[in-house]
Image (cartoon, rainbow, N blue to C red):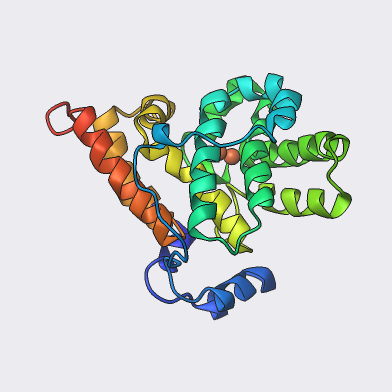
Amino acid sequence: MTDPTTATATTTADASTAPDARAAAFDRDHPVRPIPAAGPVDTSPITLTPAAGEDLDPLWAAVEPLTRSRSNDVHLPISLAFAERLCDAYPAADRELVRVTILLHDVGWARVDESRILSEGFTGDWRRAGIRYEHERQGCEVAREVLPGLGHDAAFVERVTAIIDGHDTRPVAYSLEDALVRDADRLWRFDHAGIALASGWFSLDPARYTDRLAEEIMPELITDAARRMAEADLERSRALLKTGVLR
Ligand SMILES: [Fe+2]
Ligand SMILES: [Fe+2]
């Protein structure tokens, strides 16, 4: 499967092909792809650096029941840990925006028909499945419900929902924060926990799933830091899971 992001993911982004002004502006601001890191890049196993601090604990508590769908109680904490590493590598990004948004981006899955998640969300043209738009819309609703009560103003909530809306179905990023959320959302799959869970969603064995990660997901990563983290994790996971012979 070729994704539109792949076409701009190697050398220089072409703003003239971007679908709208926000994507074009982001391409102009970050013409080199993958985007080079400005800070340190940690490629060690993600288990070594869990998400730091307790400031997001009230938000976790507010959405806890909504994390129990589609293994989001595993996906979201691991992706938050990756997001914090990406913020270290790209210090120009608004760290709070990235952290809050990655925590919330998939809670909308809890409000869609569970039986449709696997039947529609992970088969066929799964990126364009209606249920994927629905989980984005529902995720935005959750953000609007929980964030004001935790002290976030309307402008911040708007920035969060602007990233959640389209995080799966829109092929291009609109901002650095949007790009980091997208990359963190993909990076968890390269860890062995992500492979263990997500290979089953796509009805693939772990070896074939790692092949798919290398061929389809790796080229979608927008930042160079994410590419380096993904490459290191993929190598570790393939060795751990013996994908050379278990195929
Ligand atoms: Fe999603
Ligand atoms: Fe996700």
